[in-house]
Image (cartoon, rainbow, N blue to C red):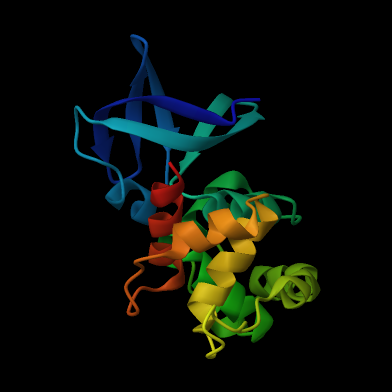
Length: 194
């Protein structure tokens, strides 16, 4: 299993990118938001991966952040949701938006994703709502004792689940812009940790 690839962005387009790793070009299918977050062609990038093997051969899927890959993993375990549909879900909604829609049981919002009808949306909600409600972050107090924004609390919980220590999490979250959403905050924190 390929966990990540580290190389030079050879090309990128609407459906993914090609990453040059030591002279070998890896084609990765990615969500539109993940492609948008990539550095420019010719620059270094590290891309998280999942491989799917089917009748037509193997396809390598790429992700900009761990929350995106984790949600992809959850979606492909649902009957009737293949990797392409899971990737389409991540192109239409950010991981936090999709989790919020599942927790709110908003089948209408989920069924707007290409390839997902009302029946599939209901199945996604049924299979994931309990898990997401258990994992849902709660607002935790900041270091100074004041209430912390839910997005920052969610990022702290995500970093904790990745195995970072409280001191590392505190360092990673420093200098974050108050207006950042959950996805941007997580990217900020992971860049600081790198």
